[in-house]
Length: 121
Image (cartoon, rainbow, N blue to C red; front, side, top):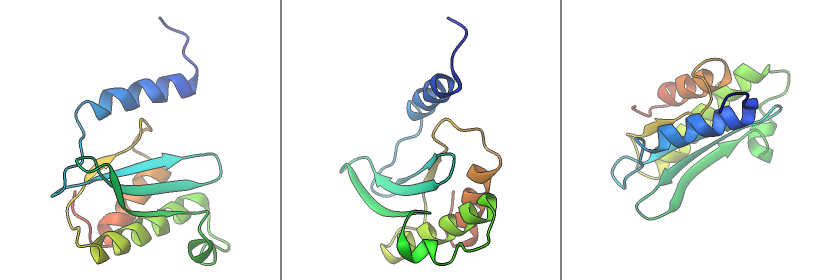
């Protein structure tokens, strides 16, 4: 049972988290995915199966503002952008889905940026 790769361990944690974290229409899920170079965030309504808002470091308008920032600062900016887009879609409260990643570094920075942008969770 042991000897999991880091990816397998993250996916196992993610499955465990998703058993409890569900995005409803009134309180969608803020899902985070972190790759080696980029960070992605989506606000998802699981009832309807729809993405309400999203932001990532790969988008052109976000990328233009990332020049010279380290990855943690980039994640903070993505959190602020996704919060701004969610508020424009009429969403204030979300549940946070860290995607099986540990809550530190870029994942924590994204969450703090989203809170600073006006989201509540």
